[in-house]
Amino acid sequence: MDELPSVLWAYRTTPCSSTGESLFNLAYGAEAMAPAEIGEQSWRVKQYTSSGNNQALRISLGLVDELRDEASTRAERYRACMTKAYNDRVKTRSFQVGDLVLRKSDILKSVGKLDPKWEGLYKVIEIVKMGTYRLQHSDGRILPKPWNVANMKKFYA
Image (cartoon, rainbow, N blue to C red):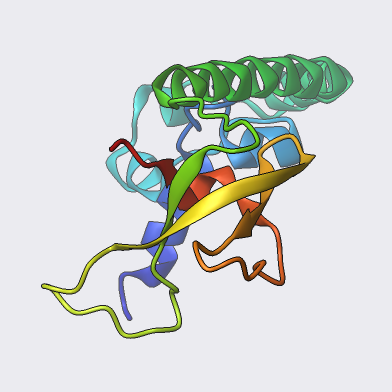
């Protein structure tokens, strides 16, 4: 509990990987000093002058909107890169009417270690929309709700 303020300070003043800026800098338009810098008399503390500091703050406050725009652009680029990396690993699956598929066991059932993860043998009878299908049991009963492609896999005889 005693370390919480310093951990929060470190979180707010550490640059994010997505934006390249610290949260403190984006909020206040200035770089924060760590408490250790004040106690140890760092170069920044020794070079401090009130007039120079006020002038630098005015300049940085004038540029804070540009800084936020750049951070937003970097964050969008980061999101696009992460989306591409995720989508490159996704295996796209699509089924046609008449395909035989297996469906994931219901999540509500307690599935043990040795229980099957897939159940039934279903026939695709309708494509509701892209990635969602209406299924039919092998005995002819139609499932009440459409199923998503993420919860199905093709059955190979």
